[in-house]
Amino acid sequence: MNTNLLILIATGALVGAASGFLGSFMVLKRMSLVGDALSHVALPGMAIALTFGINPMLGALVALTFAIIGIWYLGEKSEVYPEALVGIFFTASLAIGVLITPEPELFEALFGNIENIGFSDSLITIAAAILIFFVTRRISQKLLLSVVSEDLAKSTGIKMFPINLIYLLLVGLVVALGVKFVGTLLTGALVIVPAAAAKNLAQSIKGFHLLAASIGILSTIIGILVSQLLAIPAGPAVVLVSIAFFVTSYALKSP
Amino acid sequence: MVKDNDVLLSVSRLKVKFNHHLILKGISLRVKKYDTLAIIGPNGAGKSVLFRALLGLIPYEGKVNWSPHIKIGYVPQKVFVAKDIPLTVAEFLGFKTKDSREILAVLTQVGFEGNNPRLLTTRLGVLSGGEFQRVLIAFALLGDPQVLLFDEPTSGIDVSGEETVYHLIHKLQKQKQLTIIFISHELEIVYKYANKVLCLNKQAICFGPPRKVIDKQNLEQLYGEDIHFYHHHTNSHEH
Image 1 (cartoon, rainbow over the protein chains, first blue to last red):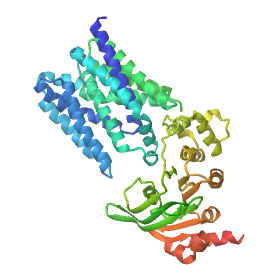
Image 2 (image 1 turned 45 degrees about the vertical axis):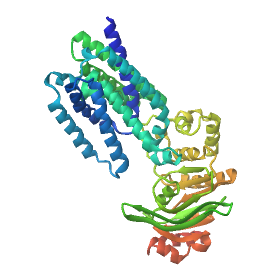
Image 3 (image 1 turned 180 degrees about the horizontal axis):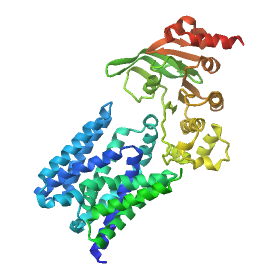
Image 4 (image 1 turned 180 degrees about the vertical axis):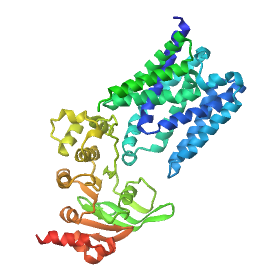
């Protein structure tokens, strides 16, 4: 096994861990589909970045940030959560993204290509993953209490407005990290599937976080190895491994 | 303005609107130390909205003045906890304090016998309605509040459980010298435990000691022509 592959696997594992950890909140907040839809917004951002020769991860991050501020604003300011609007907005960005992404890079943008992950990408990913863990730990209690009852959280003096925004921005960051590995179409799965699998087995929040992060790590490591062995794209391999974890966890779920 | 030292809460001309619909108007009341204030009224009268305004959870017009540095414990009415949420009792109470002795102490106060080690690692979703209500009360008690706000403490619990929750609240009030504000729709409970009552139907219909201010006319105004509640009360009183 060469050093490049090792670095790749280590970086992938970190993305898996961060996605699983953040995803565990997403699943509890019943926002799984938002996470999935959100990943589609990355595509036009990547397309624009590719056109201008900038790191596509950065393009994805900028596009995601805008989308997240939009979601957050709609969620906080409007009485009814405009689900249809979010769905329309996201599919529109996917369609526009497909049209404006340069042809040679389109497949890569949609499904990821780990061959193209450079050393600087790894460094950015490591830094971002550390940031994600650090910040999420700081806001996790407040987020969780608001999952139980938003009123209860507010009554203890928690300002949910900024907490929700910070959380969503972290989700955007983790999705941006994931696009290089599994592509815009599948990066949402990295956030949702390990967390959903972990929820089947967890008996406490602590266990839930640990399990979600672990399944995220294992899915990316096993998925990348399998993709190397069978010479298939890593994105679908990683996602399918995580889904295998989900199916297993569902079978093991205590009634 | 709160002038009297014993006044913990004074509300004047409170008005709440949602999307131009007037939900509450002209609510004025005072709550003194160790009072037990009951808020009664029909469904949709704005009882829970009043609570949420008192807690500052929603925008309102008018004045809500709590005495300075007051600590408020709140037990919300509808807390939907999914059965499969992997959150234990200890983790939930841990959101408020990391002191495990304090957690054990409040759990004992709300009627869980001290030596039930499994309770702490039990998931919220598998607790019975009554147990969950007690855990919510325990949550409210953490941090030693002076005032407790209960939004319909009995909803969702069977009748045998009802009695114990009110009994518990009453016991806690004596033990911890608490001021209590609760929402209820049962007049018997109001007579038994409250020294003040606010009859609410978008506006205050009566406010004062229950035996003074609850009369046929007020109840008719409160509940419309359906004075079932009133008869219910007089019947139970003759025994």
